[in-house]
Image 1 (cartoon, rainbow, N blue to C red):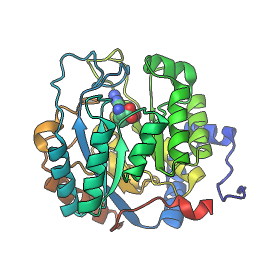
Image 2 (tube, protein in one colour):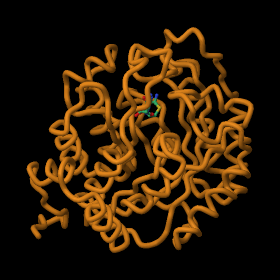
Image 3 (tube, protein in one colour):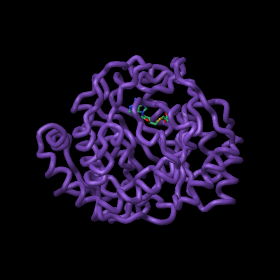
Image 4 (cartoon, rainbow, N blue to C red):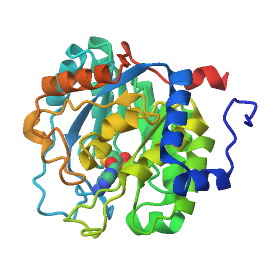
Length: 342
Ligand code: SAH
């Protein structure tokens, strides 16, 4: 097997394409599981997810939060409510909170900075933000206020497909955001949706190579799930097996990147997250959003856990990790990449 100087397994485009389409599925996932065990260990890292606003100024063709969806009841948590949810996550033992929203211009950068300062002073939590495309200066201010990590999926590396599904955004700007975040020392996560209408195995193979080449700290991926109030209403959902193949291959070529078993995997198949944990994933994102808001963060339909309280998700996730013979990590669970980057 070929490894580059930085230790990343060299898998060619053709090999990736073979494993995406023809290679034996069980063989691939066992391989990815072995790589996960060797480079990440048995620990599963928990990230408490707080979906704090479903307002969005964007027109993404796949997402139920898109501004044009007038059927969605909108909510916006106050900074005090968000902080209370962070404290709940801290109490539940999550070393990281992920604050996610639509692109909601109502929160100013200084409001985020106040919130970050308060979280850093009063809890031990690492903070990941997932709030969309910002300028370098804005990311820099957030970093200065204590933001540890940022999630921004590039969604697809096919520029034509990107233009179709994100008509008011640009592929170049999305990648610029990722470059800025990395250069500011923010632990950076990206990823894709699998099974977008018009997406090919060839473009998925290029996505996997791009995820490797970006040298990401975190990678999140899951099946595309069709939402009835979007232009992609009625399109077929992405397939779990293909999503797991992409996950497994990404684990094999990136080795120690943090990769969640995503809610989308669990929404497509009741055992989707367990299957992902056995195919390379080493992170879970239990929901800490107050129960009264959960159903409205409807990026896709039939999301799991919408009727649960935060404590319920803790219990369920502990049982899931235990049943797989894995352990729950303590602490913030920072990037494992610092070691391999040298
Ligand atoms: N506004 C933020 C957060 C978006 S929601 C941002 O743009 O980064 C987080 C992720 O959910 C998206 O990046 C997308 O990959 C995924 N997502 C959105 N709608 C989806 C759908 N219909 N099916 C599957 N995943 C979806």
